[in-house]
Length: 474
Image (cartoon, rainbow, N blue to C red; front, side):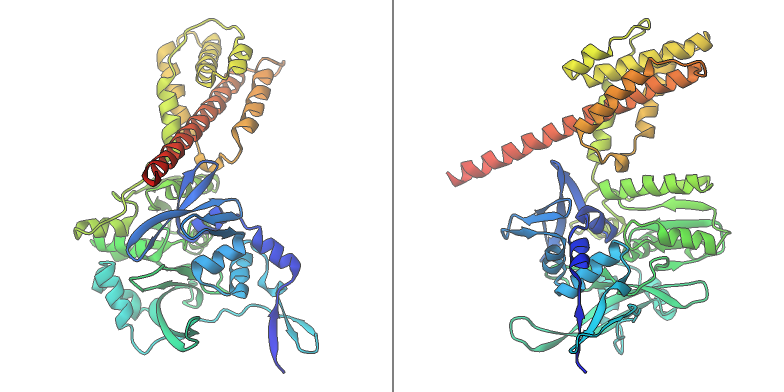
């Protein structure tokens, strides 16, 4: 009896409403902040492009003049069929794939559980070996090590050419994630083509609590976004590499790392080696905060000179590479903090006037002054200038761009409320608790100023770019 896959309207709506920034960064894609949204940076036919803009679940390809929701994006960008696109998005949204039903031609609905099935293996892995060693410059010894452990192989799959209708074969590299008993639980597949759009995807049915990794004997585990990043790092730093542990997150989700730390309790020293760009920096700070909250104390950060560790390898071979990217929002925060100067003023409310005029850097400066002056009420030996500079520097250290989801207007409302509460001193308040309130006012004010400055700079850049295009066209 013929069967086909039926997707409900609820599942379609859920899949289509997926936040594309979160989805793409979890798949290791590179995005750059662009106005209120992002630009997707990708390579096609050896050329770097950034014509696709992302905002929530919507996207638009300015080069090809098409756009739409999340499902259409996955269909167009990854070349997926409609059911495949929905499954990928539902899987990311943690909607059980068992909710997708098979329907017979007599309309009998049977719930199914998505089976984890590895892609068929090719008889050899010559193409994959050549791709990893020649194109990606990964050590042949390293590739052979993981191939012999059956953690890397070459797949052989077939597809129908959309133009000719002919059946063609395709070869991809597959990276396996195994549990501590050695059972395959997860697989990541990526193209090895050196032309067209590259793709990477998690094989359907994978248990994402596991991912491609190597577990060594000492207490250190190094954490990467993708298997190729991990293999590139080992190639760059091969000395005694097998005694360390390495894991590729298959994006920026911390799930497989937490599983590894649970399965192998000797791992206590975590080094975050995510990409040296906005997404990688955010991921490192977010995962570090999660690990600290779980009691891990030894957490380090290692950054590539270029965007990632494979780009470092390309640079070493004299090839064109993608450079590291400064985190725009963190950089803007640092610039605002640099502009703050000690006030050494007496305690006096002046926030309302500054708020009305939108002088957020001045609000931050005044708030830090109030914070230090309040601390001095409790300890007169505190050096004003030294403490002021310490608190200002702490704003940089404490700032977490990944938490900055609200728009400036929302933050302004938050700031207004913080200022009101700061002067409502109760019987249980201490000098330290009041000083903390003023410090938090300074944090919020700096965040607002940085966000607004960044938006203004991006708007100006867009105007300049549009003017240049109009000038060329005229």
